[in-house]
Length: 227
View 1 (cartoon, helix red, strand yellow):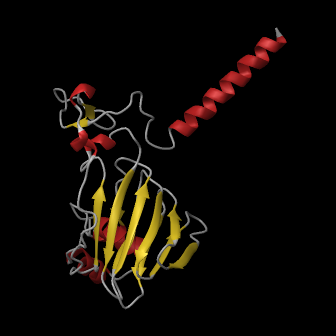
View 2 (tube, rainbow, N blue to C red):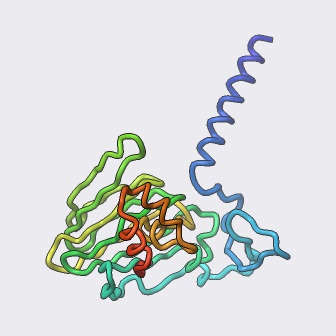
């Protein structure tokens, strides 16, 4: 009887631990692949996308071309992010992974402080020199930074605010993998000062300890989306 009880407790502990791991990222697939289709099945939504019949899948469902092409960085932040997630490659549905190319303008090209609510990011620099970093959660709010050169790799943990800044005199290029088919992105300045509808200025005045005129000015600006 005691052995059965111990076995039950051990089994329960393993299952509980496994469920915690499973909830830490995208759900594991239950088949070889689940190519996404834009079909809401009469208004019913799922956590991800519906699948097409696997027999109808083809190479194009798993293919994307063009990440070798430099992007235009002539914008207010001096960077452009080119995503390859489930929206671009339907075959990524349920596979828990995606990719981005990031182009940075010479000195000052910035991928602004942002978070990915559903993914850890691992970034590798191909060209240029980047100053990168992330900030830990409350209450420490510790800034962890590094200067990266070609071939260097850096990890940004899921959900933490992070950034990349080109400190070189030439353009920079990086690629990053993300642990979700749809990692999401929240650019901090855009979300706080460019929300739709706007956040009550009194809230931001109190939160940032700023003059209300400064808050309303920031809310009146056009906040560039580099994605």
